[in-house]
Length: 174
Image (cartoon, rainbow, N blue to C red; front, side):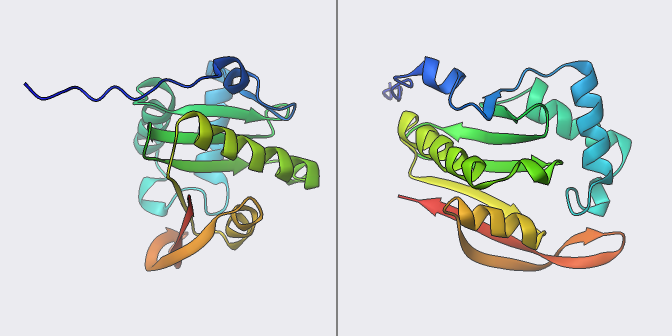
């Protein structure tokens, strides 16, 4: 029989639970998920046209918060945004997404705490890579601030109100 790979669990669960003042573990409520679903549908370049319908948004919410494989979500500020580390594979990789609906909260101290949280996740789960993607140049800029590098683009991969955008692939590696 093949050996079962048993990666080490994080050493500091308490630090992951309460990492930094601006970031706290997200506790989904019906109201917060309802508001998030509306933002996914309405906010510029958050979800491509083909997924901006009730069934797809419901599936996105369920997959990310209710049926999660191994996702870790943090609330930014007082529900000013969400930062998610998705499909975490300890010892290997994960995907990161950030949805910020109050950009005024993103100041130098927020960027510093964000970089520190990303390092904490990488250290605690011994990750070699965090990937991300966005069609929004402002999000790409924020990702660069916290250490992500552009790895390429998929032309015409994202559509918003019928207009095509490139989807920028981002990565942070060790």
